[in-house]
Amino acid sequence: MHKDCKEILVTGEQITKRCQELGAQISKDYEGKEVILVGLLKGSVPFLAELSKYITIDVYFDYMDVSSYDGATSTGNIVVETDLKQSVRGKHILIVEDILDTGRTLATIVPYIRERGAASVEIVTMLFKPERLERSIEAKYIGFNVPNAFVIGFGLDYDQKYRNLPYVGILKEECYQ
Image (cartoon, rainbow, N blue to C red; front, side, top):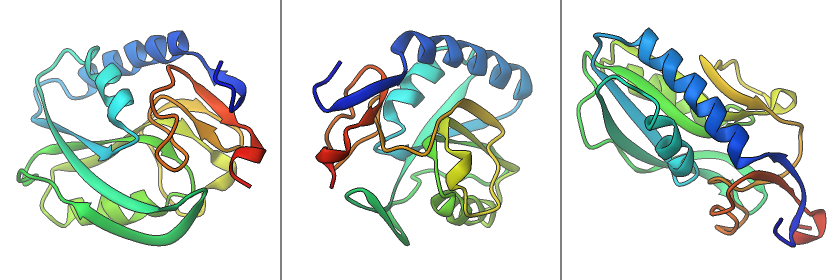
């Protein structure tokens, strides 16, 4: 365990097993449909890579770089730094997110993509913090519910560090206070 990690919440093995389950369900739900997996950079990359290994239907990948954090706190201002490269018109969009926390980012991005003519827009998130949800937003697929703690690893960061940890853990408070 990393020296800055207080506790491991979800192991790499648990993430792999859950990605297998989610991949099977997504493959079944989207059989015969044109699907784009939209990864929200940078945090979703490890989860998207692991999840996509277990999706058995053909999918396209695209990415958006969306920012709302400054260090440990959300600014509340959602900025699209890099937009989608392909048209979503008539396609089924599955937004791949590392964590559904306040819901602010997804409450902005989902309508933004719908307005472009997507056939459907759904969310798959590795982690969900139900205690922090501020917006009316639902993920169709959820990996794990986690407590209201500052989590790192498997794509999640604090000031761009810890993304490469092979598990999800709680960051020690002294690291961000």
